[in-house]
Image 1 (tube, rainbow, N blue to C red):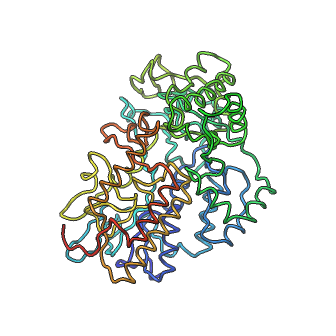
Image 2: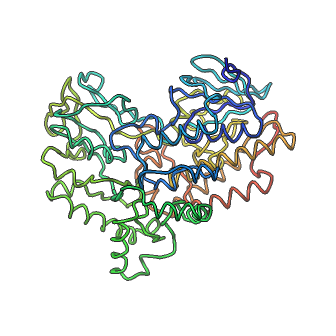
Image 3: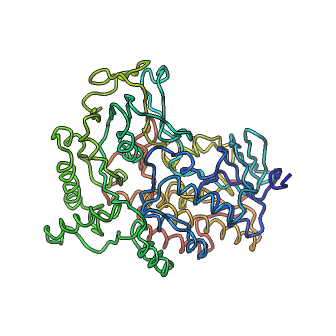
Length: 535
């Protein structure tokens, strides 16, 4: 038997074997540390393992949504499409795991139930469905969008038809041909799913609470000339992306709509609509901060929706009224066009909320007979994977209780009262307002460097100070307060979850965050306390 599979006292326990977990394993193992990764699924991949719904794909171009820690890996792997679909991304992650022999340190089908810090030994005691572990460090690589939000709708538990969720779609093929299907929600996963399933169902009833802005992906086969060009200068290409506000190519921050000729702006937005996906704003730095500039971009998209959707009433229902970008911008393949099909029906839940779900029906403005119900109702974002567990720090403090009035973290990496615990892309980091792949790599590299520094300097325990944490979250919200983000109800601030504290969680601005991170690190991890025996 592989000894690592029976290792119960590793140096580090990593929770989750997705994009973050497998790279964290690789990085720390190369430092000579003993690692165990605990993964509740029987397969690695995290988001790209669970989210297998029709049309699931990344909204970041493939050549950017990929690891950059190994140059040979960058050069050897070839993507088939501009925007990679879920099966190919999962194949890629499995390739990475095989290439670096990572599976031997991953315990599959092992779910963490409790993580408790022992103040006497300064060790984490981790309880799972299969056993117990004791480790010096505990790293949560559980993802920002990994705990589905199950809606509280009368009768949902009594539905006798086929019940599906975009968040944990079956691995086996789902046959929806000639069925009457209802889908609740019009967020990113639904926007990707709807065009695909509309091709085969008899009727598709789309229950929409809030419409979303979505930009055509204009996806297609990978342009080999573009791929060759980027691979010839990958290091420079990555640096160019990282210097942009959201860490994505094409989103520079030089021009201002307020200072530009409106015809030129519309021409640029037209170009962006055709080619840039999430880069739709086209570098106009005032779209996120100036309501008038934002309205120019928002109106452009609304007009596009009205051009595409033939029925004026349906088109109007599909037009968002809030600031563009206030909710995560979506990228689609034929989403709005789908509503021109006779078998697709849009139900506006703001006008007619769902009253109840029957054994084979759903009732809103009228009763709809359905065979299949799909939940595309989003996630308990950024904190759900952590607050759903019993994570206990100093003095018996439970993380979910500490975050009851709003999650607070230092840099999205450490939490006061929870020593030697790290979170990858946690609250207070760019995370979901950036390209997640390089943001994950940045955090993994920082955590590995920090642990290495502790070893070299004979430090046993690290913990963020309450003062540093408070000051950091004030900065997060101060920056957000300068933008349109705080004025929009979204999962960025927990508004999609009943009873969740309303607090803006992502840090806005990849370059600013990177500069802050480097400054704090160069000052011997300013804001962190080492070897504190008690608070």
